[in-house]
Length: 203
Image (tube, rainbow, N blue to C red):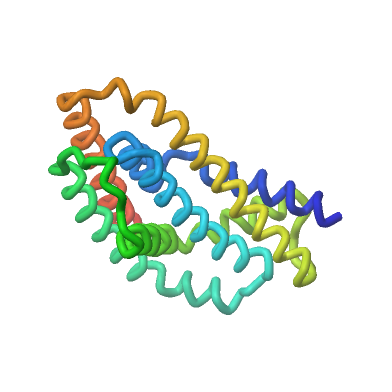
């Protein structure tokens, strides 16, 4: 029973992460520009955000989901603004030296910023609720089952981002300075567009 719920959670987490949104774009960009470790940090942050929202949906914490939904306009506006800022920075970014290790503060800062950005879309909770219901995992789950389901969601999300960084790494060695400059520009524009869409969607 526990393994079945875990496996369904993995499927949901993977499926929810597959659509290439701003987190996926940032993950690909960081991998191409700065190396696989930087991309994996983005993926881990996004998976943590999915874990939090997956657990809210799995435990049926309607008080939290309703509170987030009621403030969705401000949450989306803040998240959209941050995405626009990050997109502009990405557009003008230069090649980083992947041989220079990033310190613990840099890793933590990148990780927490991605967790925050992932959580600026509270509608994700309802996506998880719908996916859980489709797989017969509606309300009534015990604490253990809900925990296993939330863990599965996080693992599924991590698997997708691991696949994404692996694929991007294959192309990284073929990039020269001109190619990377275009990667930065395209990624920056796409992230800015995602931020503008996030802000406009609440109007």
